[in-house]
Amino acid sequence: MKQKRLFVLLIILVLSLCLMASLALAQSFDSMKKKVSEYTLDNGMKFIVMERHDAPVASFHVYANVGAANEVNGITGISHLLEHMAFKGTKTIGTKDYDAEKKIFEQMDKLYAEIISTKYGLNPDTAKLSALNTKFTALQDEAKKYVINNELFDLFMQQGDAGINAYTSNDATQYINSLPSNRLEFWMSVTSDRFLNPVFREFYKEKKVVMEERRLSLENQPIGRLMEDFLASAFKAHPYHHSVVGHMSDLLKITRQDVANYFKEYYQARNLTVAIVGDVKAKEVFKLAKIYFGRLPKGPAPRPVRTVEPEQWGERIVKVSVQSQPILLVGYHRPAETDPDDAALSALANIIGQGRSSRLWESLVKDKKIAIQTGTFNGFPGTKFPNLVAFVAVPAKNHTNDECLELIEKEIERIKNEPVTAEELTKFKQSTKKGVIDGMKQNASIASTLTYFEVIHGDWGKAFDQITEIEKVTPEDIMRVAKKYLTVKNRTIGEIVPENEAE
Picture (cartoon, rainbow, N blue to C red):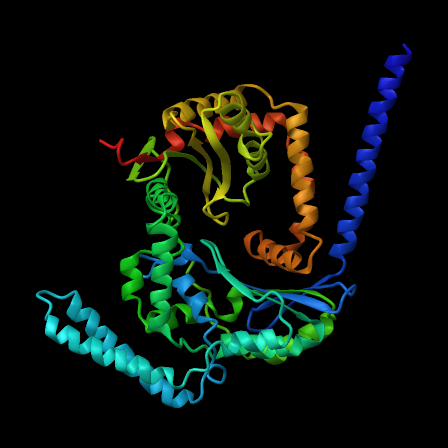
């Protein structure tokens, strides 16, 4: 009886500690949330500010609500290319004489159009093409004389920027800076100039850089080839079917005018959201934002992505033959992150395949030893629109993709029909909560989170509600979403088949 009483007391103590920790965390998040202010300019651009005065620094995050999913056939890769161009300067930064430079740009654009027309027309005139390329090279050399290399980047570095960066995804393009907080007005001035007076300097040179990026990261990498063909099969209609880096033929033919038009539509004020986190005062930020970013024109709302991926009618299989070890990728369609099923799907993905205590690792790698690596991608390749939860396995020597698929299917059937254990669910909740908490420690990650929730979820405040949603997940929820989404009809299988094994 004493042992039983002690056990009950221990359970009560553990539950009490968990409750106290949850209450403390909720209070901490409530306190953080109260430090956040927002302001929308007349042109529609939104600013979100969190004051944190523990160090004289601030992080700046500009979220452009445009990514590869906004691209149409013919201009795939343009979002990523535009991100590259954003570091090339403005009419006053990065140039010795913009007026002279502009005239050369116009000549180059006209000549490049003629080169493309000649090269891809019927019966190309090779002699004419050679002459055109020679003239084009001469113009590029002439344009170089006016360029001050990396002046924009150097300006930020000289002001103490410790985090200048940018990246493009399927859903967004983001620009990041971390500066001493007394450089707030400097950031306002230079960044607003980037959006108000963009100059797509060294455009043709940068196109070659992006094309080489595609070769190195995708075409010359077996996993890159698999990913491209897999997504093209999984998404037959929605633009998630093409990669962020775009198709080579599109990159070759995109013009500087294409980029200018794309910028005008998607980089107008109402499509930009800014978060500033650190040793700043919200009132001062909003005052300066009106002065500098209030100059951006108020344009019409950009075109939304119209295409919705239709229901999949049956299993799809794609095989890539290349000199490589075999790799298996199995993806199932799932709804966007804003769907009520998201938290349960996150739990499912975590328990089945994320980390060395996951079911796939325990089964395929540790116990059966038929794989050397396993994992799960959730929210792939983006989260704004309906996407995929996918499972990957790399077979061990003398084992096959088919063997891995058989055990993955076994684990999927298991999670459909047996409730996950309390230990598995607790591990998911604790690790996910830790990730949320860690993301709220640094200025840069907070700024990123605030813009993400504002754009994707329509409310930055929901960033502070993540733990509540995690806590709601039950074993029954996980079984339900597994049965709903993890069906053979709803899946795409992609695999690398070593060339010596291909038929």
